[in-house]
Length: 117
Image (tube, rainbow, N blue to C red; front, side):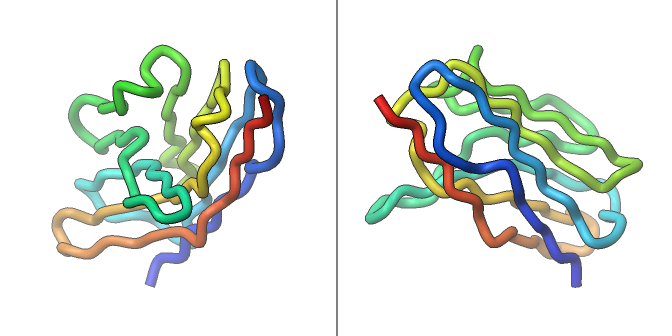
């Protein structure tokens, strides 16, 4: 069972930056989709950005131009660079991996991002 561990969350002022990391405990089978989701209290979990092993990256409209997703397959690690942060970006951010051939998916435990105005 793949374990995902997120890090890099914290408190930042509006306009600031954070970089989230998600480390997988073992190699992820291909093809796969790795991504970031976020969820606020009382709200549904929503897509932030996803990056398949083959194909195009997708971003939520609300983060386009501000957030960048990246992956290092050699390190089994996913990143989310978040710039120009806004208070509405305050949420718990979750790493997600879907192993397409195996038909299984994994979630990280989440990391809190808080943006103060």
